[in-house]
Each structure stands twice: as structure tokens, then as C-alpha cells.
Length: 617
View 1 (cartoon, rainbow, N blue to C red):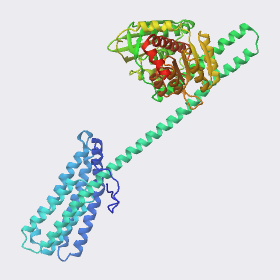
View 2: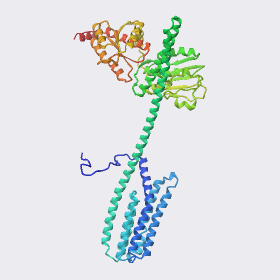
View 3: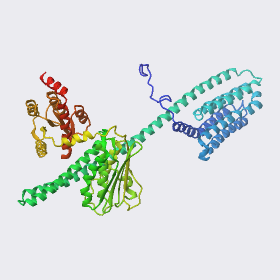
């Protein structure tokens, strides 16, 4: 497409009305700009007209009587000024009368009057004047039309009515004049007026586009300011985040360092056992904190997508109850659950994460009384309500409780109040499931009530057989190969698997692990591998090679990566997935599921035969 530069001219970029949708706000802004332009330039136009007319009157004072010329010039100037004053005062009318459009309407009326007023002098005096005086008068009128360009050209209706009525009255007067020597003046005046019309149209178009550009620039400035403010807030939040993370990680790390030193310097078995309990507590606290930080990061990265599956509501909430009963008993609180018995299509991980964080928060801020949990299905939605009899939440901080790292200080002691991430994670988990977490309005100190509703449907069938299979899978003993480039992780996983009753062997070398699986493919049941390896192959590549050797060998992919692609790829291979850091019970449950999957695979003779043929080929 040929550009304006290629055509030999440089055209400035201006968005046209077809390029920018003229909203009511922009249209009103254009009208307001017209009014301000007219009000600002009308006095200048009047002064210019008076100056031109006075100059011509002085030059031709011997032809046209000076007193008459000055009289009608003053009359015209007064009328122009009066029109401006009256129209300007209309802006002071009440807002309900829409003063901007009323102003434009009265501008047209008064401009028409300004042109019509010529009818009187044109009818009484103009026809009897000599041709030279008539020519000068026509010149003055034409000059006044050009003078109107700097004031009324932005309002095309006003300009057109002024020019037509003024020239019309003049031409009307000429029809009664005995002089016939003004044809040249009339032709020149008409041509000048046509040129003025074209100029007015161009001026009006440029004016509108200028207003649009100004409006766009103003919007861009506002957007830039908003973006700048958001970046400043984000930078401050990041700084607070880093400071909080550093502080909260150092706390349990310091405790672990001191406790490890104590354990190394004591021979008292009972004392060592007590220290081990404290070490496990600090380690669990650190793991929970890191998991919470990673969860928040996952939600902010948009890496969380609900994975719907049939879920027993009573079983899931039973797990939550068993998890928090020891803490509730320790604080002498009654933990009450009223739960629906049906199977629903839900994401069990997100639902448990949201509810568990709400229960944990309720227990922490309740010193006496009870914490109650209600889960009921109705209207194709599951409603969950967590209420406590704690200190309540002050109204002035209710808008902040869902913000990351916000910690309430209503409880007398600030110990063990967490990291200010629980409600943030709960809220974002609920949002990911298509719901909204709400805090009921209550008066202190009657406690706090959180509730949410998430869309769901009844599961087609209750998969009791699957649940029973999973329970049986917990008793299966497997031969497991562990692969990770971190030797400490390998040692910890192998020790955990041995403690769970499995036969496990670990590797930090990818090649060694693949060789062992290849040589013992008939006896290997499971491969647990990290996603990020210090090798040309990653964990997914290793699992693909293993499945090519023997499709019955199950796999688990581990990763601390927040991206969801690894999880989706692992599931596409038919493998399990664990996100670091994870707990022993999560590893145990995943292995149990894969043990059942292996049994089902081996029980199908056609798949076993196909796998053997594939391996031979």
C-alpha cells in the first residue's frame, strides 16, 4: 500500500472518527471544547471586525458617511459581544438543563439574529448608496465572514447561518439598488464565501480530530499513571514479600540449627527424643511456609486449573477433621463437622486447601468455645461455612484479611498466628473453583464466619471400588527406583520408601538409573524421578524411556517448578505427579494409586502381550 511519504507528502497521524469510536463522553467533550473555543475567540473576532471596519471607514470617509459607518459597526460589535455574553451566561444554568447543548442552541439563534439584523440597513440605506459604497460594504461583510472563522467555524451550523443570512440580506438589498456595477463585487464575495465554507469544514474536522487526540493523550497519561502506581505498589509488595520470606524462613532454620547442635552434644536418649520432636515441628513449620509461598506464587502465575473428579464430601472433610482434631484438643476447642454424604464432581486438592486454611485460621484465633464446619449441596453448588467463637475481626481491617502477609492482631498473643497467607490461599483456591470467599458481617466479639459456594454436580456413580482398591494398594510392597540430581533428596526418599515397606534404590546418575531399569524391567514396579536433572534428559524423557521398555512400570514425576506443563505432561504419560515440597502421606497415597494401576494393567492379558511384543521389537 502506498504511503503518504511515497506520494510526496508527509501527513501527520490523526485518528479519524472512523478509527475511534465516539462514545457519549467524547462527543460531550467535543461540544465542551467547541464552547470554550467560541467563548475564547468571539471577543477577538469582534475586535478584528471592528478594526477592519473602522479602517475602511476612515479610508473611504469621503464616500461613505463616517457617522453612519461607525454607527452600524458599533451595532454589529455590540451584537457580537452581546451574543457571547448571553451564551456564556447560559453555562451558569442548572446542570439538569444540560447547559452545554443549550449553549450551542442559543449560539445558533443569536448568530442567525446577527445576520438577519442586516435586513434593516440593507433595505433602508444600502439600495440608495452609490456602487462604491455598496462594494465597500460588501467587502466589510465578507471580511466579517472570514472573521467568523476564528470563532464560529467549530460550530458549523452557527457559521453557516451567519454567513447565509448576512450575505442573503446584502444580496436582497442589491436587488433594489439602481446601481448595476456590483456584479464583480458579488462574484468575488460569493467565491470568497465558498472558500470560507470549505475552510470552515476543514477547520471543524481538524478541530474534532485534535480534541480526539487530546482525549486519547489524556487517557494514555491516566493509564500510564495507573500503571506506574501499580508498578510502584508491586515493587513495594515485592520488597515486603522478600523481607517477610527471609524473616519467616530464618526463624525455623535458626531453631533447626540450634536443635541439631543440641542433639549432637547430648547422650541422653530421652533428651534426644524430645529434640527430635522439636526438629520435626520446626521442619514441618518450614515446609508448610514454603508450600504456602509456592501456592501463592502458583495462583499469581495462573498455573492452577481445577481438575474435577468424583469426590466423597464426607471422606474429604473427614480427613480435614482428623488433621485438625489434635490442635483443637490442645486448645480445648470443640471441632464440629456437619457434612453432606454425597459424591460430587470437584477438585479435591483445591477444596481441601481452601477449607483446611479456613479451619486452621479459625482455630488459631479462637481461645475458647468451638469451630464449626458445614458442607451442604444444593442448587448445583456446594456451600461451605466455617464459623468460630473467637475474637472476631474488627470492621476496619475486614477489607485487608484476604491480602497476602496480612496478620490480624486481635488475639492477645501473637505467637503461632502464621504468616498471613492462609486466607489468601483459601480465597484464591475458591476463585480457581469458580466461587467467591466471603466474610459475614458480625459484631465483635462474636467470632467470624467465612463461607463460599462453588459450582458442582452430583457424580454419576460413587466410585467405592476405586476407594477400596486404593486402600488395598496401601499394603502393596513395590520395588522402586529413585532418580534425583540432589543426593540428599535421594537418600531421604529411599529411607522413606524403606520405612513404608518398599524395596528402594536411589541414583543421582540418569544413565545408571536407566541401565538398572533396563536390566531389571521384569522386577521394577515404580520409578520416581525429578523433573529437573543435570543431564540432557529431563524427568519426562526418563519416564518415556521407561514406559517404552515396559508399559507396566509406573512412574512418578517430582518437581518444584510452578509451571503446570510438567503436571499435564506427566498425566498424559499415565504417570503420577508430586509437587515439592510434599509430605509422606502424599507420597504414600500416590504410590498406592499407582500400585493398583499396575495390578490392573497386568491383569489385562491383551495389554501385557502388546507390551511384551513392543519390548521385543
